[in-house]
Amino acid sequence: MKKRCMLLLVLVVCTACGLEKTALKASPDKFHEIRLPISQDCVCSESSVGLKGNSAEYGLYPWMTLAAEQHEDGSVLYLHEWLADARKEEQADTADDLEIEQKARTGARYEFPIVINKKVKHFISYYSTVNSSFTRRSLERAQLYLPEMRRILRQYHIPEELAYMVLIESGFTTHAYSRARACGPWQFISGTGRKYGLKINWWVDERRDPLKSTYAAAKYLHDLYGYFDSWYLAAAAYNAGEGKIMRAIKKHKTQDFWEMSRFRYLKRETKEYIPRLIAAILIAREPEKYGLSNVSYLPPLTFDEVEVHDATDLQVVAWAAGCKFSDLKKLNPELRYWCTPPKVKKYLVKVPSGAGAQCQQKLAGLPPEQRITFRRHKIRSGESLSTIAHRYRTSIRPIKELNNLSGTRIRAGSYLVIPVRAQGSGQVVFSSKIYTAGVRQHRMPQSVIHRPSAYRVRRGDSLWKIAHKYHVSVNNIRKWNSLGRSKLIKPGQVLALSEQRRGRRVVKKRKWVKTASLKSEKQRSSAGKTVKVRRGDTLWKVSRKYGLTVDQLCRWNGLKERSILHPGQVLSLSAQ
Image (cartoon, rainbow, N blue to C red; front, side, top):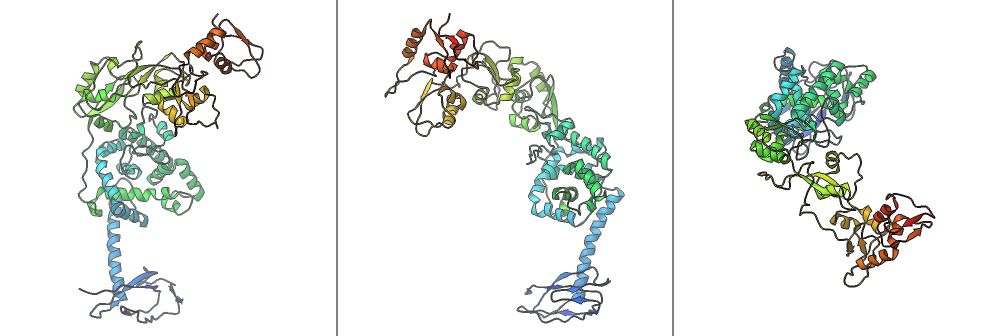
């Protein structure tokens, strides 16, 4: 084995150096002094030699780093031999680049213009070495959607290679979400997505649908090409926005993307977008050439579509199609939750290929009340939409939509229809607890937690913990117990947990004392009486003083809960 010691010598060669087989000698411990004949046209300094003029021999190398090697046999590396080897390597790389560009110009392989430069080479190296694991996974997933994506792009006269924009945008993942709130394979922001026909609401986000989002992307790219008449600028505008590219053209007076990239106006992400795209196209076409061999491509996605009317639980659809719930969710990534959107007469759901007819037949024979699970909930005093939604593990918006509520105010004693996800992921069990909006009677589910009328504070308790435990709001606890924003609770303190409990006096002994008798005595003593309102009185203060509830005072005096009392006003303390 040859013993090598690599020593670096930075050397600048100029026009008329007159180098004839100049030897670079080195030893393992130090460099030998090297004297180079420099012509008068050269300007020398301690660290470098300046270049004036052009040299056929050394013009390609204005500066270079040479490695002087010391072998056991004392052989010498000559400068002109090193230059010859370097030229051979560069000519080989140039030949490959010219071959790719020639194929692109003749239209033999590429519809998208291919240019090879340092930036493109950098990202080819990046995607094939540094980030090769991401590239490999992306290429494996790509085959799920690429056949349909290419078909859609051809339909809008878009180069098929632009399908690989998805590789650099999201890696062909449907649930990709960026810091800029862009979503889906094509990374649409909500405004642009809606502009090109994608539905984005609480129930669905069609930016996640690989096919619907491809239609939107094809329309967008078609419009961008119409603006700029350049696929480079169209792709750059997809990243930065058409307004940004238009301003860059006006500012720098050029429509050449590479020339435009020399200036600071465009962000780095946009400047790198086209080199990344070209690198992705080249690697995706010939992964073996760039070291990505044996890529395990997934088979193209195939499916049937069935028509689903109104809101239908995906557990029910999976049962009808004879597939797993998780498989159905993968086929329909645009569905954000566990059911299809309500108030939609016909929604197309993708099911595994071959299961469409069976699924459609089973769904057609299914009664409407068995398509989705609803619970009819009677609103209790002190409850809000937020606490009800939390109890049933849903959110406020679907409750408002299903009950036609414009605001968030609800009345105790009225009923709400609550969408509830079916339990389990296997067979769907239809029970008597499944209801629709038209059902009048309902028995409350056993899972509802019983809430006491009062609670004794323990060490470590907070208002939030108590509210969360008993499904009430912190504001209601403050209201029922006259607690200010800054007032703290203490261990042993008794808190009212309902409107009816507010104002009761609790005797603090070791055991709880029933207070119903205290209230009844006050009510009997105030029966048939009236009271004159004083300055500072409120409905809550008056009701607390006489052992009544705010609801009773309002009902007996024709008032509302938010009514303001005026000094001198007479209130009845009993039903007339």
